[in-house]
Amino acid sequence: MTVQVCSQCGFSLDDALNEASGLAALAWVRTNDHGRTTTQCTLCTRANIRAIEAHLDQEAWSTAR
Image 1 (spheres, rainbow, N blue to C red):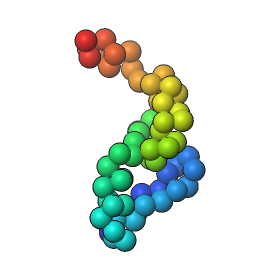
Image 2: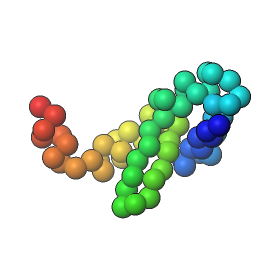
Image 3: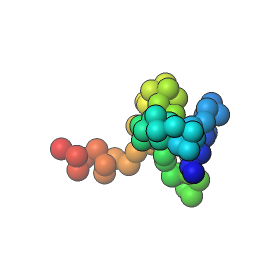
Image 4: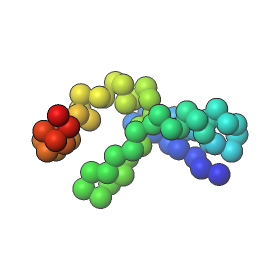
């Protein structure tokens, strides 16, 4: 049983409740910043995508090409 809780809005998914919750959790974003792990639901990720991209290393962008 895995419960995912959004660090931004507090929304939660429990994959033990139904298969749809487990599949929806695959689209969530998990980040690790200075040892602190945060999880964001799809709605919060969409709302904060620019801030997430701003925290990526420049190397990630230069090697992707």
